[in-house]
Length: 309
Length: 309
Image (cartoon, rainbow over all chains, first blue to last red; front, side, top):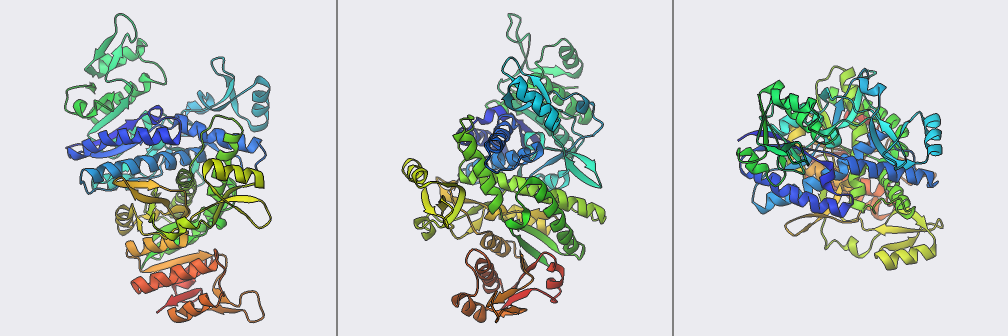
């Protein structure tokens, strides 16, 4: 039996409410299998497509003159936590009932602390929201102070910083619930990014990488295992080439070398490997990268990639 | 020291993110004063203006051809719980820190069970979302099966049922947190309405009155006090007439009589009085109706309207 923080990708959740319902049914099946084996689960998840959709709906509606207000990015993130969390807890509750497991599952709205001094704020890199023409982009830069970049020939987009998570504001409450046997959904979309201000926390337009946020959570709740779920069963080097090699194990030193050699794509496998490395380095615990389908086998040491000292 | 479920109106939360931030700062001050006096607090809240705004943004964006999906009403409600809950917990955390109180505060996404057999489903009455022309309304009735009504000369609107809450899906987890001293925000907007289906719960387009939902929660968590906050300090009879009388006490029998005599406005004071009556009848506990400003004094028996046997 282990306490496990699971990080689930936002791309796996589909791009409509119905797609998301179908996706979470599948996710819930695997998660509840882990619960049935006696594990304690905290489930974190991405929100890239979902928060983009919410942001776009509000931008479109406001420009449409509907009288809806502009919705700041942290608030869009909070909405995405409610939206995704509702579907996840609903699906997990159903699978728990089907297997006769009397446990609660619920979503805790989560804020994640970042530093105003984080250098990411000097260099925003994470594209969010709609595509604009050059002219519109210039106007947004002037009027709202947005940072706009040309995104892969598809138009101009706003970019926000992607700072490093330092703390989870709701960590005590989350830890208490999971230690008591409840299944907690937390840190959705990497959490609502907040900085310390005026004796409290204030939301900032930024996106925290969900793998790093979940890793921070895994440390703070003293998880035994940090399980990162992705589209592939294992981590590969020389991915997509003739020398492609799928890895069952990866020690910290070798992982560092592979990162430096550029084996892992930025914004995709690289943050997962780095987050896994952080967890192992900081806690001595076990970090696994695998697919949802292979999660149970990876925990049993029979599949996936384990990152270790 | 008492365990208190507080029901806060959605109209008190403003209609933009900034208005809401200002409003919750004020709310948090009163709530944390109650905490400082040793009370355990569960905070429920309305979401009328907020879920309307979210619904409208998605309707507008979809009709604008932005590629965003249609967002069902339960999912809009889940988003509103994240949006409002984030602001509330953030503001409460700040006030707790300012007073040196080491307690956690967080929002739990909450589903509320209703019955498919509830007669409200035969007679939808609660207007939600945008205003439409007669022609658009007819089209929506045909294409989507919506129920549309003419709303006070302002155009046609969709109406959804307002069924009676039967159970709170996440009650155990919520009760555990509050019994452990945490401040819990739950049942936002009356909860996400769900019916039992296929061995689980399924969201339905409906709006549960937040006063009734909070009353159900108050029963289930075994609250001592059910505190309904509204725009006035006390309940009045003959409101707005020369015979206007503000009530300090109201026993069940008299309350019933006043309800029948039509002293209380439907959709406004009537559900509050009825929810308070339910709580007193079912639990023998104390129900109070007052303003945010007078909450502490009402608890001390010095202001507000107390509903009792």
